[in-house]
Image 1: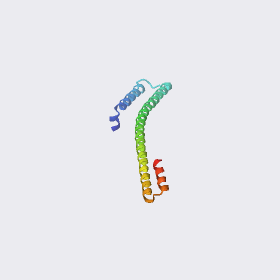
Image 2: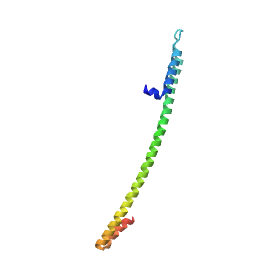
Image 3: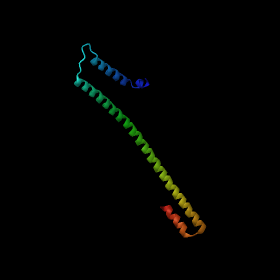
Image 4: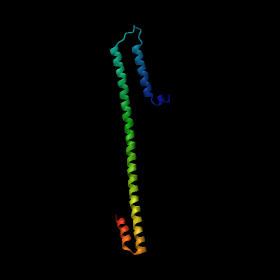
Length: 120
């Protein structure tokens, strides 16, 4: 019943459908079978359900796509921030190592090696 409280239009549609079926099938006259009418009615009901399902699916997919796009933007920003911080950290590490090697040895090769990595 909680489902019908939220979707009262669906409940109204079901009641109208049942009422229509009963008005055409319950008669005081003798029952005659009209296969074309039964086939047309069945096709109409099936098409109604299919169209309703398509509308429901489109609405659900659009909201899902919006959520996905928002998450993709957030992830892209996070990746850019992480990449910047990684590059900045590597710069600082290589610069400090080049300074340490320069102060320790006064040798050009290790200093130049880390200085070139810093410039990279």
